[in-house]
Image (cartoon, rainbow, N blue to C red; front, side, top):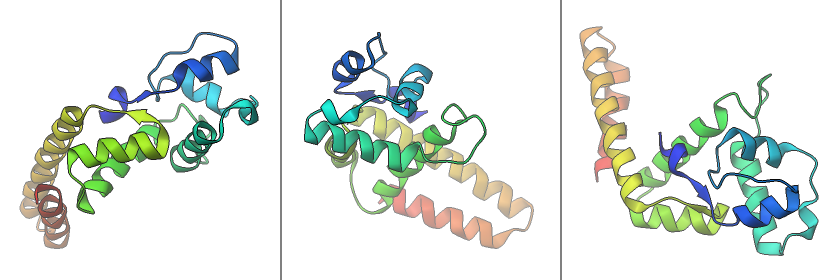
Length: 150
């Protein structure tokens, strides 16, 4: 999944703030738990603090019992990447947006691979929907494929 390739550019700053070693991976369990703990973000510079708050608001807000280790953050991140592509951004622009908005580094080639995999999954869903006579689902899936591939 694309979330497994996302790294925080400012992981070292967060590590110093937390007081213990953290992985660079944005969606690792340790990083997610640290972001949800009571650490003082006010000591970070404004830009980094805003990126962390945007990350928290967009990916870590859920009502699951096991939050933030419930899988919702990773799903929301994948959904965000697909949404950005459907809105017309290419893989390089998506990588740039993620860096600017959240301080997350993802290689454009990883984004491109993820989008290709997503299209294959959607094609399989459309085929199954046709076989089961669920034409509306097949039509919706085909529209998502069209938006991703353009």
